[in-house]
Image 1 (cartoon, rainbow, N blue to C red):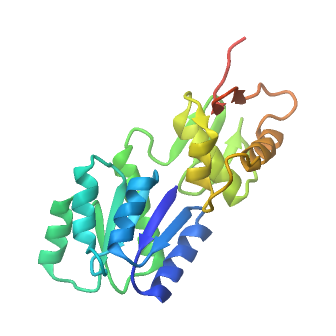
Image 2 (image 1 turned 90 degrees about the vertical axis):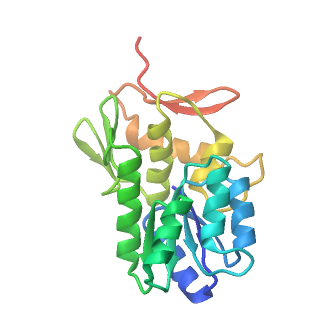
Length: 225
């Protein structure tokens, strides 16, 4: 999942970004509320962690503006204050949850997972496509009961394809979700990683699940003969 971290404390921001990336997420970061609002309008984020007290625009105002646009991304508000009024104003503005500083990265990740589960209760932690199964919490995959060893980047790519299945996903969308860099439109990084996945998932004797949709991107689905 691509996540925006908006926190004006550079040291804490770096710590949060590191934890999210270690958990397999892609991140962008800023220390300014105005820039956070701009980024949230420019990119397709799955979640945002917003500090309430930021220069430019506070986290509650950013949350309110994002919800006014109709965005349904997960929003966690972080505050150094434990005042009940701050929590209420944040939740009323449209935040999904809040974190009171100091908080552990484990708590942050757990709250993100809980928000994801609430957003898609029909899926829970498990996503299945044919005989392929992904555990989003444990970040593991297996096909036909056999475990598939994946890197964090490979799992994130497979997760993006599985969640969209049976719809195709464009290369641009995959780059936005899986990579935390801005690639040239002609890059072949997606093709390279899709080939990595194919070698691990579409092994000999199994029907292929990853398909190229010419002019669009890639799709994960079982195609009946």
